[in-house]
Image (cartoon, rainbow, N blue to C red):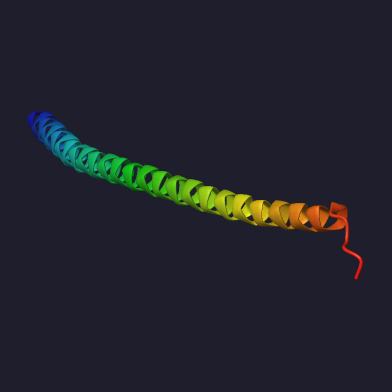
Length: 98
């Protein structure tokens, strides 16, 4: 009876030690995953900042291009308007008879 009790106590102690060891390993893995999660969060924040900077840069370039195209269009329309007035003035001016 003492032998069976000793074997059962020994198996219980081994199971308890194995369980504690498993919990310790699991805790280390959780800590490693937490560090990895924080690294991923940092990378996400950095990527988000880069994306926002790129979007702002593209917005500035698009605005600059739009302004440039509007200025070019205004200049062309002014030129056309001037030409129309020249033609209109020429057609309204009485021609001298020779």
